[in-house]
Length: 532
Image (cartoon, rainbow, N blue to C red; front, side):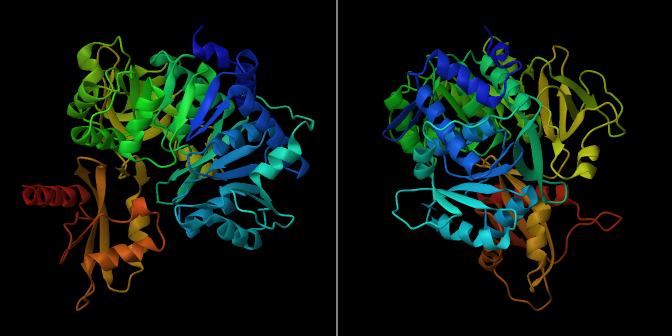
C-alpha cells in the first residue's frame, strides 16, 4: 500500500498512533547511545501531552520548539499533536531579537527548549522572555541540571514522569486544522509565519517518501534541521508513516555524519547540497563503508548537474533531486529512480501526485510548454496562509488559487520541471534563506554606511554566499570586519555577510534603483579572478 493511502483522513497524532500500534518495538529514533521505539515515543508523547494539558495548554494554543536535533523535539511535536496544539519550530541559531519577534507574533503560550546548547544559556534567555512576552506562560527545559524551578518553568523529564498513566480528554482534531507555523523570510525581509495543516504535512511527506520507496526496513539519515519544513515533513513524519528508523545528529559535522551512516547502516540519506559537498570532501581524506546507502534526496538549495553526478558516483547511488518550499509543506516535485537518466540529472522531476503546476507570465497569463516563467502551484500541500497576515496571503495567490512561488521555471514536453532561477532576490546560503532587505536594514543603521546593497554570489560548498556592497559616508573609515561585527549583534550567523566590498557608487536604473544583477555579475567576475 502506498504511504499516502495510510495518511488520508488522519492527523499527525493518529499517524504515529497507528504505527505504534502495528509495531511498537521497532526502532524509531536513534540519537547517540539512545534508541527509542515507536511505542516508547508514543507513550512519552502521551505523558507530555497529559502534563501540558494539566498546565492548561489546549487545542489551538501555540507551543514553540527551540531545540537541536534531539528526540525531545520529536516527542514534543507529537505531544502537541495529541492536544490539537500548534507547534512553532524555531532555529536555535536565531538571535534574541529574532526569537522575541517570532514568539510575540505567534503568541506562543509555551516554549520547549534546551537548558544549554552551543554555549547559549537558553534557560536564562527564555526566563527573561516570561516577563516581556505576556502570552508566554511556561518554559519547559531539556537538560540534566538539578535546578530549582518556579511554577512557570518545568523540566522536560519531570513533565514526562508526572504525566505517565494520566488520562486527559483529547480534543476533536481534523486533518484540515493547522498543526505548525513555520517562519520564513518575507517579501520585505520580515519573517512570515507559514500555517500548515496536518494534511499539508502528512500527504506531502508520504508522497515524497513514496517516490524513493521508503519502508520499514530503511534507516534514514541527514535530517540536520528538524525545525525546517523538509526535516519536519519528509524527515520526521515521513519516517514515522513508513515505519522506518531515523538517525539524528546534534549538529552536522561531516566525519561524524559519515561514521553514523556506516555505524547504523543507513539506507537513505537526505540533505542540502552543502551537506553532500562537505561529505564528499571528507571522503577524499578518509574512507568509510557507505555500501548500505541505496537512495537519498537533495533539496533546499540550487544544485547543479555536475554535483548530482558527483554525489551519485561517490556517496549516494540513487540520489533524487527535489524542489521544496516551506509554503508547500516541502516537496513540490522530485525525480524518481525510474526516470530517464538525463531527467534525473537536469531536472527536479515531475510534480507529486495531486499537485497542479502552471508556468505564468509576468502578467499572470498561463504560458505553454517549454516556456520560462513564474511557477504557480496548487495542491494538498499548499499552505492555509501566512499567520495573521491576510494581506500577504492574498498577494501570494493568483485569482485561480495558485500559490506564486517567485521561482522561475519551465515544464518540458514530458512534464519534467526545470528550475531556471528566482524571481525574488532571496539568497539561499547552505540551505538557509537570507533576504537582502533584512541585512540591508541592519547595515543602513550603521553611522558610517551611506548606502548598501546585499547580493548572493555563487559558492561551491554553500550554494551562495552573502556579499554586502557598501558605499561609505564620505570621510568615514570602516573595515569589512566591522561591518560583519555590526550584523552579528542582530542577525543569525548565516545572515551575516560572508564578503564585504566597498564602492564609491552603485550602478543604477533610470528610476534610481540599484542594478543588483549587474552588481552581482561584477562581483562574481572579480571573485573568479581571485581564485587560482
